[in-house]
Image 1 (cartoon, one colour):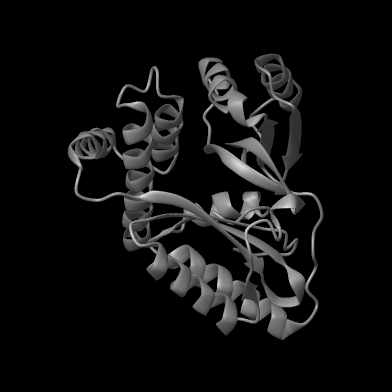
Image 2 (cartoon, helix red, strand yellow; image 1 turned 180 degrees about the horizontal axis):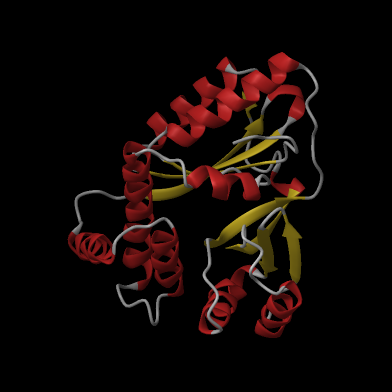
Amino acid sequence: MSGHSKWKNIMHKKEKTDAQRAKVFTKIGKEMMIAIKEGGADPSVNRKLKDLIAKAKSNNVPNDNIDRLIKKAQGENDVAYEELYYEGYGPSGVAVIVYTTTDNRNRTASDLRHYFDKFGGNLGQTGCVSYLFEDKGTIVIEDEDNKLDEDQLMEVALEAGAEDFQADDGFYMIYTATNQLSDVRQAIEEKGYSIASAEQDKIPQNYVTLSDEEDIRHMNLLLEHLEDNDDVQQVYHNWENADA
């Protein structure tokens, strides 16, 4: 879930324990609650919900679980989640953006400030690093067995409205405008391709390389603690050599 290291993220997802998968399901459920309250429970007219259903399926959430999440969200009135972004710096100036869904912003801010302080960074003001990132839709297709025709897939993606296409180490990354993510994903799926992930992303405009071993250790610990927090949905950063 951490920004630039998308290829490693996809491989890392396969190794998640049952407890980690359950946490992912819970986080997606919170996003669905927000999306349904904002745009209704019909994915044919609620594009955000449609994208979240696709995200749930890419994370191996069973259809029955998805249906239950939607029903729960329709009837959930006692918990009001809000979406908040926090910005800050990791060790040696690594830019970090944390997307959260929370029912207690004081708790969330306190937890995040503690993580940043503990691992050599600091939580900053809104806007302190967001200008270093560009909002994009990203679609990842896995091809570890090299069975796909790269040129054919690229043609399909670009004809569907994708802005950019990259290949690396058994994966294809397709970039779209944020408002085109759903349409491009659907067009690619209709051509028979299986999508590993499709989501809104923040792409760094430049990257930071860490050489100090203590900085690297602290950055890994910061990411681990952020991603393990129940309120955190996504973490974006510009650390080029991240393993998370």
